[in-house]
Image 1 (cartoon, rainbow, N blue to C red):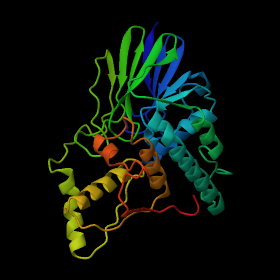
Image 2 (image 1 turned 90 degrees about the vertical axis):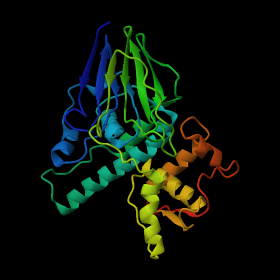
Image 3 (image 1 turned 180 degrees about the vertical axis):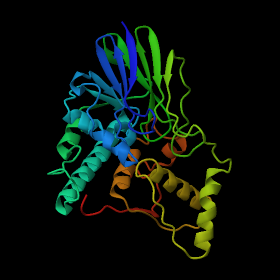
Image 4 (image 1 turned 60 degrees about the vertical axis):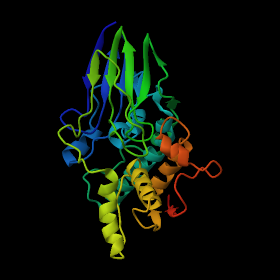
Length: 321
């Protein structure tokens, strides 16, 4: 069996991760991200792929962030009919992110048509809600450290990368070779998520390096967050935090709760005013008894209500979800 790797995204840029492994007559796509950022990158989402989506046998996702999975509904629209493999956390989050992305696509197209600011007549969404729903229906959720079959003596398993809920590196065996796709790697000694698992020995390593040229601040994370908060609260102020709905919102909320419980910050109401963040938090709660989250988070989960955060954390859902 001959093996070959081709990179159709996250090469020369840091979004649009799409790595195609060909193992004999099997074609396995690892990640299927959307290009984000400058217009010249976003336009790549509309380009014809160098491979035929209908010829892809399996899609394997390292995690659900849009730059790694956001093009999946389009892949389905273009003819992909195979299974989509992810961790159970990835499966749980897929409907939230892909349906939200479809809503944005449809709203942007409708707005362009109303305002007539596009040369396309009519402007069309990259994918629709129906495409996203069909994609969600193809996702299979796997446990960490458990091998699953990709056919023709090719198999894979996930290892926790501690980046967001369900994030993983993919270890794959084919033709007597071992290939590892890192996905996004989480930081060590962080609350909420466990430390990344050790990298297994491999013949080929495909690694993400978005922040490979940066050095993290040595100041403890709690101090980084609590310092500005304390100064604002002492002045009677209110803190507004724009945050990513999946991962960052849950992390910053946990840090604030722990700071208040330890007396580092005064106890004040914490409002999460994002429907997607609220829905994602419910998925976090669902998997808080799994090997997805840090042991401290599992220990603080209320066995009756399933609550992770104390009552001063208030969730708000809009009426137009």
